[in-house]
Length: 290
Image (cartoon, rainbow, N blue to C red; front, side, top):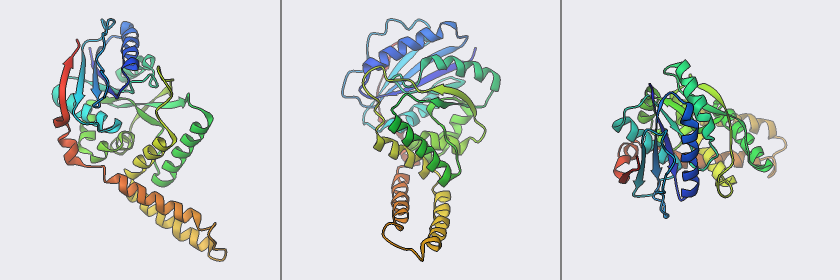
């Protein structure tokens, strides 16, 4: 029987986490695997631990309390490092704790992992639940990522990672800044499983336009060498194209491109392998619920 660990980063969303754990327990009723849950509490200001009455199908449940808030991507990175160094496992399934990653799709990951062996699986977004404006922005994000990096990244954190993939991620400094960008960088042969973006159990989505913009630029920054080459080629071509019609308006794309290059260069500074290697020092306490 293979061992799976579900990795859930959380910040001030106890109610959603409680519902998610109960729903995961329901879905595991017919699963032939040993499934545990590890929650990374990103220094929440509210109490995260709740009374979990329905967890009979979950092998173990632990909550790691972090000393300092480091953000979603770094919680996942720290969790992967902890699991790799401290736990016995075959696969890790990172997922959001608010319901937008649907627990009913965990079974799909487990069944598919039995077929593909050591290959890692990504939840390819085939449908989203956000409003029209956000969906347009998301499509633009995917287009820009493809245009500037040559990479099609149509997945988020919701994945099923083999031990060999996690070992590669732990050696890649970009994992400390962008999970999906780093995963695409270290693994070219990923298996896709259709995934529908769910709705939050409580409150509106926390992914704002600016959060999406930062998320997009963080992914692009992983491939900054490719971005700089493509940007230089675009600048040369565009200057030749507009040289007879140069104006403030026609120069706007160049200004926006330079702003983007500056932004991804700044975000690239987040990639710190030393901080990544020492991330477990940020652990304050580990609460074993089961």
